[in-house]
Image 1 (spheres, helix red, strand yellow):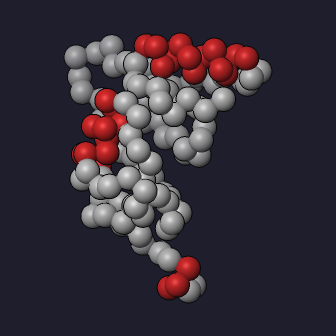
Image 2 (image 1 turned 180 degrees about the vertical axis):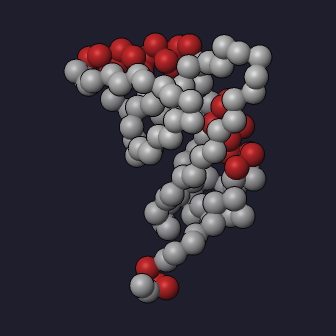
Amino acid sequence: MLIRDLGIGGQAHKKIDVAVIQGGFEIISKPWVGEVSFHSVWTFHQAAGNGTDAPREVFISIFMDEDMIMAEPLNHNQRLDHNWWLFGMMPRKVCDLPLSPVVWSRDMGM
């Protein structure tokens, strides 16, 4: 089940939880201070809300194939990400921008 059109928040978390349970997947929930998670973008993942007054800082690196094509944003949060990270790049174009540059291409060789 693809649920690409989900927003961020409670309803999305509920739908993801149902999909994970229906799929019979193991749920691993062991957060640690300074935790690092490496996973495929296709991995169902979520973070609980920050229940403190202190800001929670996050560092994210996303690696894409050099031919990754920008999809049409489907909801408000995707449009925000699209405008912030991809500077409003037109859908159906290769993602090669200052914050998401192509750093290696097959044409460059090894």
